[in-house]
Length: 272
Image (cartoon, rainbow, N blue to C red; front, side, top):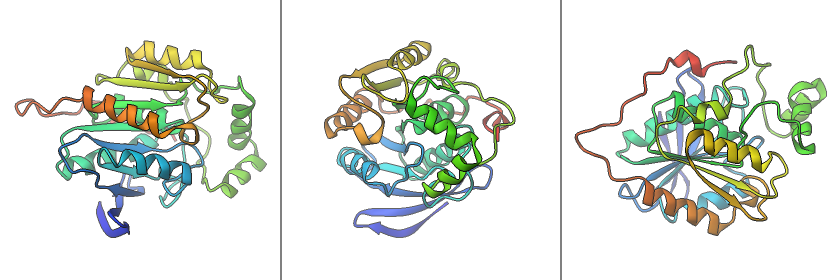
């Protein structure tokens, strides 16, 4: 992993290598330094760190804390192909490791939609962060309850849909050889504090699913009145609330008790 110089003023472009060798592109916003908890940010499906909605979240969050935002594989400047959840956990794992290497002792992973499932997966199966926040994330796979998710499944499953996905900037991997463990099952394996944020007007995933996700993992649940889906509906005030929650939740580390992996099998993170 390396830093390739300035991305924009105060922000550095970062190139990471995921566990399977996939090159992951990111942007490191230094924020106020290593005293505050640092964030890893994982975007939603078809987004990337250059999209205006993602940049707005990054700009607001980096006022309060350092943030490393990554393009998940198959998106933006990263290599590889999107597996729509499973292998992307390795991308977040690489980002967490990079921040640890820079001296950040308290790390919070924050994911939106697709990224929301990815950060839960990484926290359950990878080297855990100190807390995890999932915004507008799914609780289960193959959701077809809403028109928006039926359109997503068309993109993923139909030849013309996969071509359209490419036009939207997403390079898709093939179908899953086996169905990955669902987010609601993974949430129960996470051993760090969880925050589940979901809009009451989310047009992709039902609010009841988000509530069940929080109950499975014993996490805090914030239903946001009038909010729709993911980054595009995340207000500056909500970003501030999430940052405050992280700072209140993540205590300075015990010097005698370093963070260690949970002993998961790396192959369990690879399903496509």
